[in-house]
Length: 226
Length: 190
Image 1 (spheres, each protein chain N blue to C red):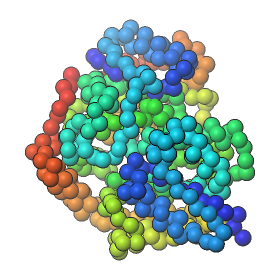
Image 2 (cartoon, rainbow over the protein chains, first blue to last red; image 1 turned 30 degrees about the vertical axis):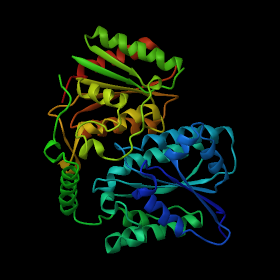
Image 3 (spheres, rainbow over the protein chains, first blue to last red; image 1 turned 60 degrees about the vertical axis):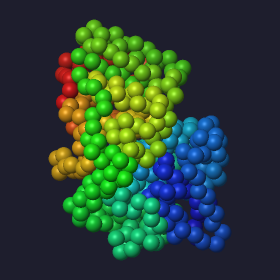
Image 4 (cartoon, rainbow over the protein chains, first blue to last red; image 1 turned 90 degrees about the vertical axis):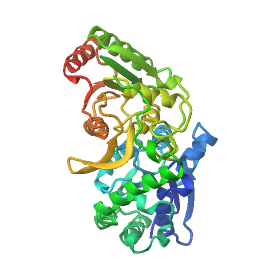
């Protein structure tokens, strides 16, 4: 029987409910739903704005048996609010040793290669180590831009491997087991050919800039260089 | 040659302030013209992930605060020095907030570098990166993560990056000597 009674989902994207991180995290915890298992979701940036001391986060973290973090890759690392949350949670964990809780993460990158998230996953593992958490593993996907603004259930065949990866991971995490390698491999599979993702991405930037009336200025250099 | 120091220490961290003074002294002695930001003292908003700096006001963040000045100072320098307590192998949250705000210096368009996709440069040249990470104690994994982070962040800006890892309590003259040796090879813009 699983020892997981309370699941805490942390969303690390500043885009909050509109983010790919939210779509992935929501899908993962939906697969972990079971009678008697409580779930809570916190948008990290909003929580820290409301309470910069981190009490909201720290209390929710202390109550959870497993903490799941979904975040976007920002400059090979975690977005600023996630690092701030890590600093607060790690200090709190060291002060208030409770039973060891589990920690797993989901990282989505706007680059096509899932491997670009390797460093960020390493930092999450280091946070777990320094905070006395049981590291259950990290799932990384590339090409996150293709899922922008969509529920995973409505993303069609393109997201088939992502859903299967999250189902497999959820089954393991619900029993407090490590994320299986099979789930990590499925999650890392490209949703479309790289050339198509890059073509669509580059076209998308042009369209968005044109809509904002700045199409011809996309490559401007507003600052002086030495 | 111009260098920019971004200090990501928490306010009131006396050891980090000591290191900062040693870094400034060593760099000035080596002939660098310095600009410095003590980021803990500065109100900088979070990146919102809105991509407005690419598709609304190309090259400039849509948030009108000091984050814009930091981005302008980065591209206006030959060497970017990132001084930070090593935090889970990476930057402190204070430094990361500023780093997240410099993406307007890149173009949204994709390109491949060494077979991996990155954003194209908006400018022709970028500063070299020098990460100075301060660790509580020696930690092999933190060292590996931090060194890789500096290299990869520099690669994002089609530049080169080097790291200097020191531990709290290490003798200042020893740190100054290591830094002076690195400055000889850190060079300017890439």
